[in-house]
Length: 490
Ligand code: GDG
Image (cartoon, rainbow, N blue to C red; front, side, top):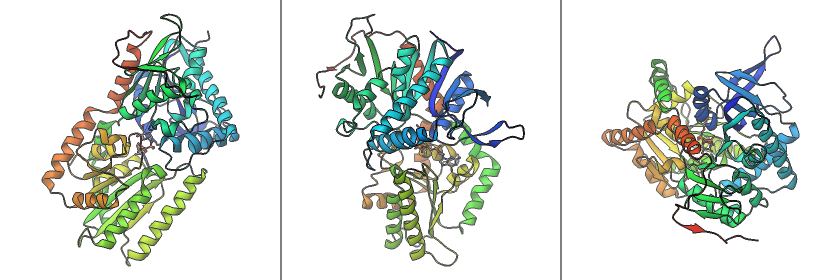
């Protein structure tokens, strides 16, 4: 059994860095890359001195493992064809839309699937080579659904956890996937499977019964047909809502330069009475089009009174080579152009659209400058932006308008919750947020901040890993509540 030297190995599609060039000595130059997963895991990795296995972000880039920011990083090479078929294709053209309730139509291509299997095996082999005997391996997200079983096959000594950052759909949707059984069996190579919401875990358990003919008991899935010690295992599926490094975000937003920048931002916007803010990757799941249409109606109705209002929409570039994303960009830019054209005046425009990525301190300044934060996702695993907004508001001010379809809605009950498909309801919610008394804003924000600060990313990781490590070698003791089986579809 080959074994490496790391007791804790994270396996994720991306390494937590981007190659931004080469030094004069020909050494690669890396920069920390943005994104939910990195934001969440980097602090945990640093404190545990583990290894991180992932793609460096550029095709055909081969390279040796290297250390960066206290982390041992192990690049997995992807060819241009792998990027097209495994990443842009199967991951972002099939699984992403399928798992987000088919907001965009998933495509099913056998050569994408073949590439997905091939690349997942590559990640599993790289992780197996890093992990010490009995190590804990934590596999991340929908690009690597097959890795747990591939890893277990090679290294039955490992503890394997899997965390799904995006929603897990209901079976009526999941069952579209031609490879549904293989995907479920891949994930079931884990000891523990984590989801953002309880409803995701419930959907997964049902898929285990229906697609793989497994028996479940409470939150456990029984794998294998033999008795105890005969290849029989219990896999647990449960919710572990991810969070942010709330303290460091609060500190950043308290920095006097950031506070001053927030005031400057409002000034640069023309000192409006009301600043609305949206911050998203430019993704069809985030409800940006719905938000813009709702904002347009609010302006046309005059529902916000005489207030001079601006909407700042940061739409950071994302997956631009996938057609649904380039189409979305065109649509959003058309809507913004029309809205500003129809309603702007010389010296004032209602929407400030920024198709750019900003440094973290600028994001914190934007959060501080916004009276109302709009998170109107149509489907979202968690949505870290909602939590960042709350963490940044050390002044106990600002109102969060939050879609009930974002995982964050399960925790952030004091936000103004909306169904973004309900145009009138969302308009009313924004109007209410805009006219909320200082006292109510403070009361709600304090409760939100308490929640986010107590349930930060460190706690998320501790709870997941604590639960995973507590389950080493566990065999099902039959202490569950309910059981289900025989639902298998042929
Ligand atoms: C997936 C799931 C889940 C965005 N633009 C800039 C920037 N960002 C940062 C935000 C935030 C992160 O990216 C986005 O996180 P989200 O959670 O909102 O969304 P996804 O990227 O879709 O993440 C999601 C997450 O995984 C974690 O499990 O919550 O549901 O879809 O941190 O601040 N950061 C900087 N500049 C930008 O322009 N610096």
